[in-house]
Image (spheres, rainbow, N blue to C red):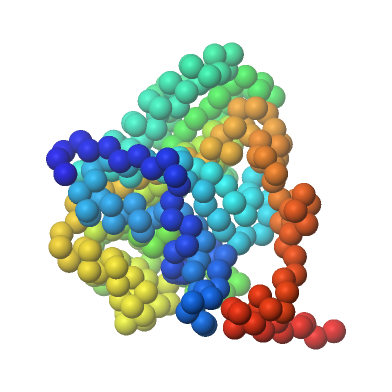
Length: 314
């Protein structure tokens, strides 16, 4: 494939994929043909889009459905839609400039009554944002009651890792495939609290509407990151065997971002809950009232899938 090839998927990402330790909890799908084995619904197309860059597709985007078994909030649903973008031979500045140009054009074309209060969009480091605004999602509007104002900004230079007080271990602030701002494996494993990442968030009126990063292409660094997260080296190579094989043939520097379409619409349409801009959304406790799910299935179905339900103790 030559330089500048643009790959577009209209049919969506692969929905039956592999469960991997990426951050959020997976929705699992049992396999009838392979008893005891499971597919996972995609948290994002992260691995697939990186493998496309390795394969030579230099620029990529799609409208992707993502599914995460997370606790519900006003700005979160178990399934959401995002504009997924990945590009090779670029840096962080290139990604942010692309998104800035895209959203300026979107607002001008679709929301001419709205006013973007500052162009170019402010770029604020995570450290400075937390110090000045006490949040990594600052609302930069002059008048926060003015729904016609749009205050976009980018938050950069996030910590690579965050400590979980509940689980007593390190987690990835974004996801493990994010490139640390150092390739020094001793520093990554020895002082994870000091490691910054090439990670950036896209914020509008105090709401995070997208996030992305430059990706790790050094497999030794990727393995070290997973070791900090509590995974053994052998486990990482087994879980991500596709990465290790594909990257061994050579991988271009690449990165991307995935703005959330639902969240953006909720903000610009002044809706307090993301459910208001989705057809057939789930309720606050993750139920679909229209279809009455989650629901029980028959014993025959469970038997065919080699699954047994363990009733909770009263």
